[in-house]
Length: 405
Image (cartoon, rainbow, N blue to C red):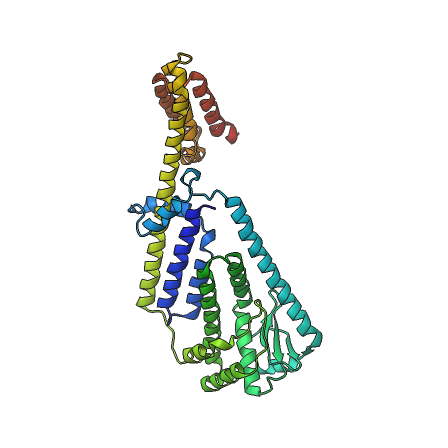
């Protein structure tokens, strides 16, 4: 993974965080989606996407990201923007991330097993659930506890401590947790936990994860507000928050005590899509598009610079042999021409791919004749040997004709 890819993903994280701050009154699920997509930015093939954007819309070089991309390219220009110790750094990155994810999974499984060993089935509590929930989720009572949480990725289970005894509180807790389950928030939370620990080195990921969790709770509060009396829900929510809550695991869907004020205030706000949110999202997408286009331009220039440097070194190595008379200037030019064509193979990838998409035999023959004519001109200029030309024509025939048999 190139340093430019990492730097651009951080730019996308920052843009996403800015959009989240602008969209405070937007629908919570929309903000949650923005958080999740920008958190996963490091895995997006930005160079390929940027090439498509640059072809679609003319972009100024390095627009909006000159300092960041220039700094990235200075890490190791000869390596095309890759760190010298990239393998070691990647190993440390993945090692720490995977270990942390495994610890979170073990902790979640261990806590669930501990709860299960003392809990009792509480099927009667399901009568407090709103009839709109067709889900049949097992409910358990944990003795001498005030925990309220949902665990389980594919088979969710609701856990409620026996200290939560008031009917209004039980109704609030069960309906809120059922909102999480019906929305598939257990999968969302799992994704957040994985991204946070896999990208542990990026503080913006942790900020986005915090906002994602917060808006996941906001979304369930907004739905519960439509299912229950608002004042009763707010009062029960405050009482549950102020109770002596037990700690929970990273993979348990459970309300955070520190969010009590934000969530109670949020219940008084009517969220809706507005032009401000559309402008914020459009601006963010535009910034990301320009940045990815700039990355593709930078990558292309870096590739050209590397090829020019290889040609310069090859010429410098062969020049003493020409001066000593061991080879002629024409021979040196022919060998340099072959080297240049070899280095240009990567640039011809798109052209070769388009050749493979030719449908009829006549189209393939016409394409082959055109390439052969171009190579003849190169041969006449002494920039390639007859043997080199024949080798390339044989390879082209194999791609065009033998592959379609």
